[in-house]
Length: 172
Image (cartoon, rainbow, N blue to C red; front, top):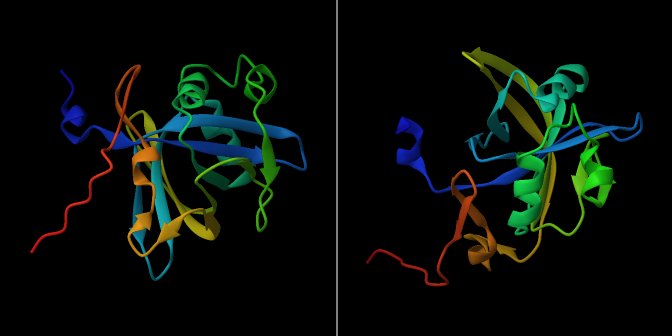
């Protein structure tokens, strides 16, 4: 058993890396991600140092966070290597350039965030990237987040994904 499964299921996102103008683009699945601060809007995520995403982020110092309900695409980009295949071509991924950074953003998402790396922390086999959010967009969003929050896939582990119920609970 693995200790980190005590924190699952977790929201799962697709990280975009590379530079659209230079034609170097990759996408990977990630559930080891968290908001960090508001005053400097930041997000952090863990990336294995062996991944192609790590190589591209080291080169361009930017990444995107793409929230999408398509768990099939999440599985595809998460279970294949950008070093071995061109994921954009292989999986017919539709993307667009960022509005602020030259980072690839998935089309047809619940949200996209463009992040500039401001800190890297190497821990064991991973690099924890902290990115300042330079621009973000979300659909059907209000003060509590997504209005249709049950569309967000949660990663349970391996090939297992789940979705939240449609019921909201508020403490008295």
